[in-house]
Amino acid sequence: MPVRDMLKSIVVSSANDAAVAMAEHIAGSEAAFVQRMNDRAAELGMKNTVFCNCTGLLDQPEHVTTARDISIMSRELIRHDWIKDYTTIWMDTVRDGQFGLSNTNKLIRFYDGATGLKTGFTSRAGYCLSATAEKDGVEYIAVVLGCETSSDRFESAKALLSYGFAAYTLVSAVPDEPLEPIPITLGKLDYVQPVLNGDEKLLITRGQASSLEKTVQLAESVKAPLSAGDTLGSLTITSGGRLLAEIPIVAAEDVDALTVWDIFTGLLKRCV
Image (cartoon, helix red, strand yellow):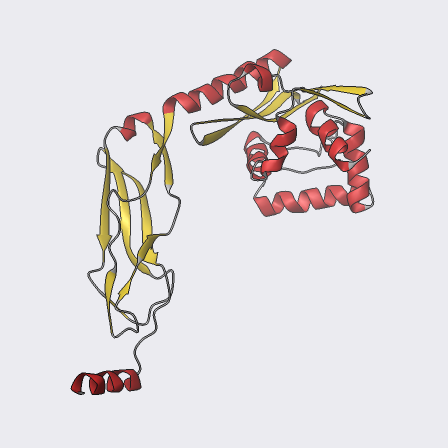
């Protein structure tokens, strides 16, 4: 089978045989691939996860994870937009239409905005789900583990996702007015453009959005030399007196200082 059909089978229908085949193809053996899984989990900060196999199907006591770690892994996965080409499939086929696939994640069909992600089940772990959904430019991840029935995991994930969409909103985290260039003394440029050093969106509760205030603090002037990224001020965002974010405002570019020769020649030009 081509890799695209292997991935489709794994993501849509939990094809554990395809997962093992992919592991062996990539790393030479399942054991070698599992070591790479554990190394990557450590890099991502999944502090309470140990993989013993590449499917999770075997009930090995040492093979453990947490909802938090699953959410970290899910967040990393959805950074790759192509994965949603698979996670949003409801029904499809492989082997030139000879074998049908049906998504084990029923939210893909029955929850508005669902984008994925993956179901899981063993007798020890119960019914599990990492569910993702996107609306109005924000995507949430809901992880539920240890449910008694398959329907319980879907209803629990739906409740978490719906709470997120209902209680929170994404707002602009940029100043209400454009940032004016700042004068530079003894620099090869007369001005430097300040820019935000951070996200341009802020996730807050809907109640906080009604009393949002933004305050910009900038230096009146700066002295060269400057490097791109040097701090020039900050944008403070508050709501009802509560600090929500403080975003640095930095220099957009390098600015070299004038040399003695630059200053001398500049004075000569003025005299002439």
